[in-house]
Length: 155
Image 1 (cartoon, rainbow, N blue to C red):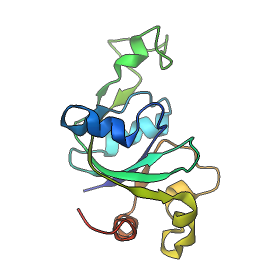
Image 2 (image 1 turned 45 degrees about the vertical axis):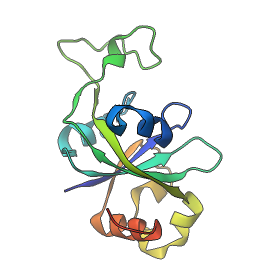
Image 3 (image 1 turned 120 degrees about the horizontal axis):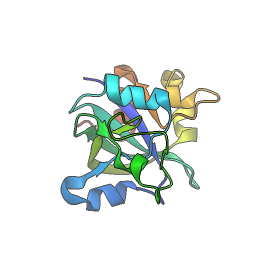
Image 4 (image 1 turned 180 degrees about the vertical axis):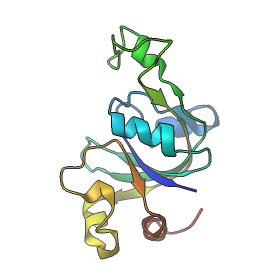
């Protein structure tokens, strides 16, 4: 089993939005970074753990625990000229961009960036690295356990 931190702007898709969706599951649309896409394509498996992270907001942080709910498949927004995620160079026969479905299992308190940084055992957490802006990053099993403990429980 692998673990991931997946960032979403709450105005686009919040943990509450995901919980309100059928089966608390949403397609993770709009990934337009090759490294993040490759994490979905090559590393993610159904059942992998996900830390649902709100970014580009007043208090960025982990706000939910989720799981990968599908295998990767083409992101339909790449073909929609009206979408902000449209990619004119991507073709249906050879899509560039993928997505996975993510199912939120529970909402948590907001475990903020300063709280994450204050925990010395998380110093190697990818999201805390200077200059990291990826929307999807791997999480080491020991970091997953520490974060779940900080959030007050296990899954």
